Length: 140
Image (cartoon, rainbow, N blue to C red):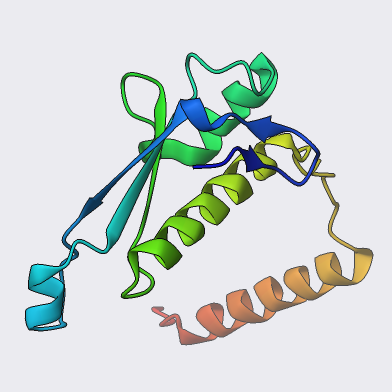
């Protein structure tokens, strides 16, 4: 297996990557029961020096349950019926995941409601209140 090259020029060494092939579930009949085409790719991120610490923290947040207790990122692929193409797909998914950790998070700028939207909201409240008052019974 070759090193995994990322978009930003960094690469994950092949020695940190390992993969296993297992039988995939779901429909497919005899073929899916006989052939191990599902690929599970693991990257030992905790002991890796390929990415800086800040990116590792972001990656853990992004990857979620794909990171196990040992600090390994696991990506699986059952996209095709070919083990070779599933390896390529899993590598692409891992590369996309790691690249996403390097992109800065979008800064949320708080917005205020416009004057018109405030006016419309208050008008609707006033109409609703008048409608409810009109339904009240008058007991004298």
